[in-house]
Length: 237
Ligand SMILES: [Zn+2]
Image 1 (cartoon, rainbow, N blue to C red):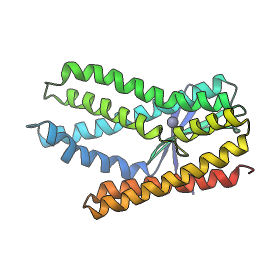
Image 2: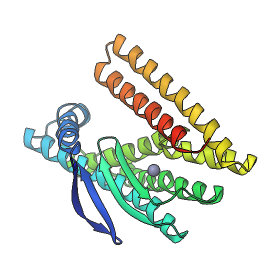
Image 3: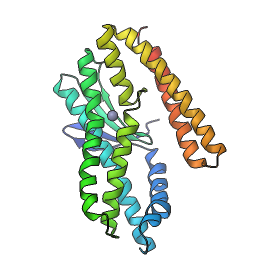
Image 4: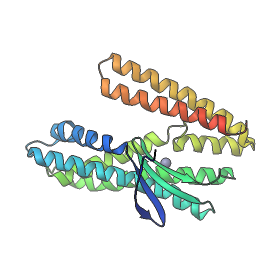
């Protein structure tokens, strides 16, 4: 079953939307329209909260797309083939043909994604510093984009597969040991530990009454654990 919807091309790279987005986009817009924006910006109409919520989610996925394009364009510059970019419920993924052949390539291709998110976060933060006293939806959008891009940066530098931090960690161990196999072995084991810790944190959050937050942390933990295990099996160890 094909769960991807072709959405166009950027720099010749096909962009796909996964159907899981049809669930997460309304959910995030609902959270923003009923919680995030009303607690910080008072007195808007209900329609304004919802419209700003949907525009914010759209801008979030544009931010993720820019992050993925950074990975893809740098990979292409270094001689790799980029098949497609897919946006899905937990973010984005760039499909780059063939494993990177050098530690230096894996490092630079991985690190440009978080750097792009950080750059976006800082640019929006500068705009936010001059609009922070305003109660207008545009000011709220700027605040949200500053915040979410910083969150994306921090999340992606977590040293666990399949996040960028996991790849940066592997490239560093690879450069130090000279062995791709050993680097994969060590970094996937660290990722499995981090995935397990995230699941435990999720359980703790649920037990403390933070149910949505806990479920989300747990889902990410399971996703990290499964991805690390898959990468561990695929690589010839
Ligand atoms: Zn990335």
